[in-house]
Image (tube, rainbow, N blue to C red; front, side):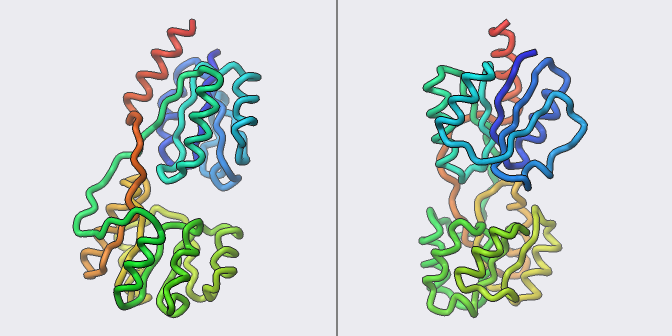
Length: 253
């Protein structure tokens, strides 16, 4: 049975794993944390999961040891450092690398920005409460807003590390919304109503990340949308990835 190395942590890999299940391919899925592992189905004997962040040398050692026929990178579109490390390992080991792209959504009337810092500047120029849904990683940029503790509501994953980051940055527990998405339009709308949100900061995360539902809820309530632009990348969408994986599998026979 051929071995495929898959780096995931988003919903994109779920569809890929499911569609490859009928082929003689053993998949090793690497996810950063136990949370990503918990979201996976349990009934796939061809799937093994490795939990924990890997450095480039660890990736190289794994590729050398397991003799994978290709690598598929289905990590988050904003995880640029991880993608760079995977590419480096693949190039060093001369193994085919495929990037699984997430479908994009139209941003409508949203203000496009290129970084959390730029988003924070925009929020600082506007008035009213802001819901920040870009994750805990870039949240520090928003603490530069003079009245951030009074105006901002960070929505983060329900993980101890994410919540602790918010607390360490000075956000009160009453302002932290810890929930796992994606969310329906109705839930987004009710959350924004509950906290009288006037500004929504989010990522260009596509349908898989619940972006259309957030955008529509903001539009209905007249909430200003600020969108963190997705980093530029090249790759293939799901159907093309499957075709290329199967082609590479045949070539290795």
